[in-house]
Image (cartoon, rainbow, N blue to C red; front, side, top):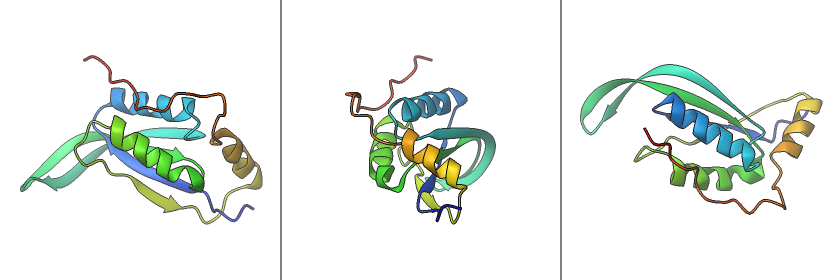
Length: 122
């Protein structure tokens, strides 16, 4: 088993289209090895009123040393005023998975793409 030093980043977004766009961009830019999307319903308080909205939860599998780059990318490319970006520690991971994640989320020296994902026209 791997010691689990790499995190899982959790965030929500409002539409499946935004979730798909962010997930693809994170993996294409080697900011994450994998992004899972789960449709959820959220209840929260925003600007003094209780809201109930459908959202998409993203589980972003990445390396600890990529957190700042992931958080900056999400801050620029996310449609919310205050996007949730939580880094959760992973206590253990299989050695093979940990090696795969380390390779897939490593910075790509050939990549020159750094900005936020393009917004889709809706």
